[in-house]
Structure formats: structure tokens, C-alpha cells
Image (tube, rainbow, N blue to C red):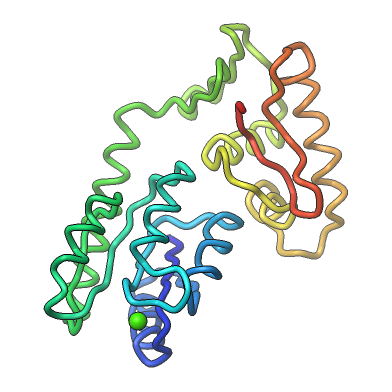
Amino acid sequence: MNILLVEDEPSIANVISKGLGEAGYKVSIAPDGNIGFQMAVTHTYDLYILDIMLPGINGLELCRMLRKAKDNRPILLLTALGTTDNIVTGLEKGADDYLIKPFKFAELLARIRALLRRNSENFTEDKILRLAGLELDPDAKTVKRENTAINLTSTEYRMLEYFMKNQRRVISRMDLLEHVWGVDFNMATNVVDVYVNYLRKKIDKDFEQKLIHTVIGMGYILKDS
Ligand code: CA
């Protein structure tokens, strides 16, 4: 499980990161809202922990931006004592839960577990991933577009599943290498381009509306508009 922690106070960030690391979570730290947003759109996290008081984009604004970018992953806000207005605003902007500083680490861990559990339950209600007539069924490992079955190789399938789970987000070639092939940075990234083209031939070529788009200098994005 990957967690993005956006927190500008290094001592707090380190304590949270160390504790969550010991609990088995992989934590990435962003020191401000701008970096946090960039990391959120270029990587995949299972949960966000956002401090509200941040330099630049604050945690509430970041929360709003993530939801606007159709990112539905759980968001836990951290707020200072006595600022309950912030909490109400945060929940209105799409946050799922909050904790008031200072908090006990066990409390943070319990909230995170509850959010992740709730999220996976929501996810199992309807597992089929959809975008503009394209459907991927992770149980049956089948793909359809406009109700026509599309045969994919296992690599193409894994790539499409990753795109579908991260639709409307820019995905870097490194991210694809890591998640589709499970390798870290030592393979030529042009392999990714080759496979993206295979996938385009199968899911996009015969349809007017293209779903896989190249983002120059950054990678690819799966979207319908
Ligand atoms: Ca802060």
C-alpha cells in the first residue's frame, strides 16, 4: 500500500513516515501542496494524508484539486487543534476523514486501516472498470469495447488494467514499466511505447473516439475527452 503524505514540518513527516513504514506501508513525502499535487498525478497512491496548513497550495485546496481530477482515493486531513472550520470545509471538499494534531499514532493507523478497508469494499461492489464504452472485467480478465470482445495478450491486459485504474491521470513510462513489467528503471522505456501502440491498435484503431493519448514529455493518459 502506497501512501502520499503532504506535510511541511519535517519532524512530523518523519515520525509519521517511520511509523507507517514499520506498519508495512510505503510512504512518500511531499513538503508542499504543489509538489504533492504533481506527485499525485504522476504516481499511484492508495491513500493521501494531507496536512491542512501548507505553504503554497494548502491541504484543503489540494483535496479539492484531487477530487476535481477524478481521484477518488481516500483522503485523511491533518489539522491543528481549534480549527474546526477547516474540518467542515475539508469534508465538503471531498476529504474522507480527519485527525486533529497532536494525535496518537495508533489512532492514525486505525483511521488509515478503516479508510483503506472501506475503499476496497466500495471497489468490490462493482469491479468492472469502464471508460466510454470500454469495459475491463478484472475477474474474468476480459475486455470489451462497444460490447465487442477484444483479445489482449497478458502484457497488454496488465497495461490496460493499469490505465483503467488510473484513468484521466498522466502515467509516465517509468510507472508503466514498474507496474506492468514489475521492473525498476533498468529496461528501455521504448518497450513501453511499443506496447502502448499494440494496445492502441486493439482498443482505439477501429473507433472514432481515441482513449489513449500521448502527453509529450510526460507519458500517456487514458481519457475520453
Ligand atoms: Ca503544516
